[in-house]
View 1 (spheres, rainbow, N blue to C red):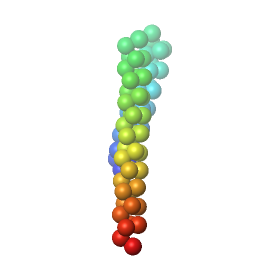
View 2 (cartoon, one colour; view 1 turned 30 degrees about the vertical axis):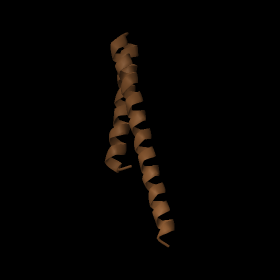
View 3 (spheres, one colour; view 1 turned 90 degrees about the vertical axis):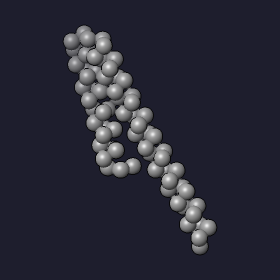
Amino acid sequence: MGVFDQAKDKAEQLIGEAKEKLGQKTDNEDLEASGKKDQTVGEVKETGHDLRDKAAGSVQDAKDKFNR
């Protein structure tokens, strides 16, 4: 995963965590729910990027084996 993608995913998770905590402290259920959603979206994106990179690495490994 690119460093930029990784930073964006982590930032989204951290922003979500902050929103969730602020929502809890202010009894704002909408803000809390939005924060939880942001965290989940960031985690899903991070997982998707990881899977994409692993798949690309596996394809490259297979190509390397056949090209020997």
